[in-house]
Image 1: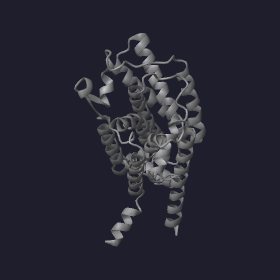
Image 2 (image 1 turned 30 degrees about the horizontal axis):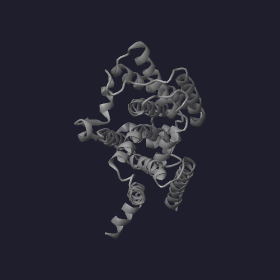
Image 3 (image 1 turned 180 degrees about the vertical axis):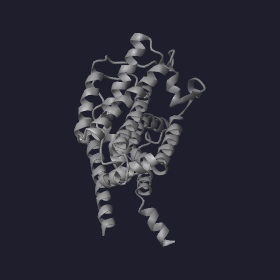
Image 4 (image 1 turned 45 degrees about the vertical axis):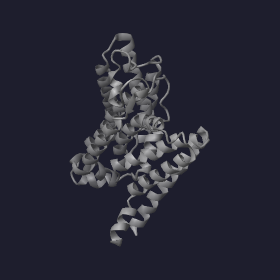
Length: 325
């Protein structure tokens, strides 16, 4: 009985879940506004694109890499697709598919630069970050169709409204799709050859190559997966943002990467969990949503979030040291 309790408490995902409960209770106690259903809806709306980016970047981080281009990439794909909708009457469904295709292309480019040409992940993805930010800036501020306009149906992928007027109720069905994606990618990470090889590359790249794993191929593929989820994040971003602004996106990747580390992915790679990423993102989102309700400005939000990330990484380092003894 004691042994089982110890194993549960040593699971960072369980600890982070407790942190979420404590934070939610604290902010609810301090602010009546935070307890409103509309606040929950707003937090979920803005968590979808962060979570999608985080799911994707979990895989490069497990290999010991990183992708700094996901924030600017997400905005870039939304801007390009939105511009084509507005200026060329591109159907919304095709624009959504274009977001995914652009994400796959940039993800594959990152993978080739890192996995085949052996560029450091930080440098390679910093370059594609600059490229996607510049490409997005070439587009004017781009609104995707509003829910009331033809083609605005894509908003209902994440949130549906039942009823009209004051009796209308909104339901965040996007949360259901996020849970399904998290479970699917957790299965991919732990139960498929791709996932096992991803972990093996992060644990010891040279040993993985000596064991017969095509390290270059799977190294490319983790960035392709990251690009796929960045494209999906672009769709979610367009659905919750009234107007996608050019030149933005830099820094958005930090919330996603931070959530992954809070969720228990090793800072040096080699292990991690998509479910951990899921709960980690909600710690970040609770801080971003709740801190303003207790009167803390944006600067303090960044400071506190940074401290949380430092603590998460220190916990990971201590776990590694404890495991090595």
